[in-house]
Image 1 (tube, helix red, strand yellow):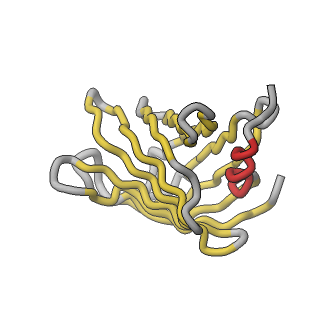
Image 2 (image 1 turned 90 degrees about the vertical axis):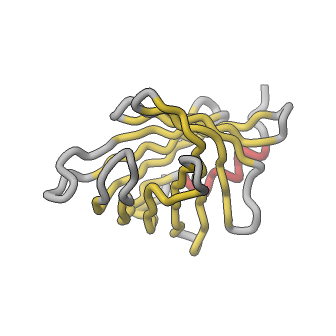
Image 3 (image 1 turned 180 degrees about the vertical axis):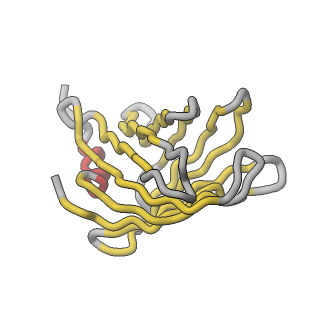
Length: 157
């Protein structure tokens, strides 16, 4: 079986990245600054792109989160699929049509603490080695920010 050619669209995320940003105040937790390392890799003969995130422990973030995105491509639906798992037991499932210019949006749901809510992750390329990430949820009153980060490439793999 041949790797879908559209998986090349996710090659941008392969490598090591540094991110600084914040979690916003939500019903799920207090606002806090975050600093993290992200490591993107192409795995299993290129069928999957895995993005691992690891927050740094700081005075303002004594309980850092780790997570794993697993991105693939669904040929039949002609869209990208994404699954997310984190160290707080959260999990998400999302889909995306792919890049629209410099913007990649994944839309779906996240389940954590016994609740399932809509989740939207927007990745906006800001240069060949940088992007901005915005995570949002809708708790019934429209989209609200959960986290956002400025991300810069540390090295390519």
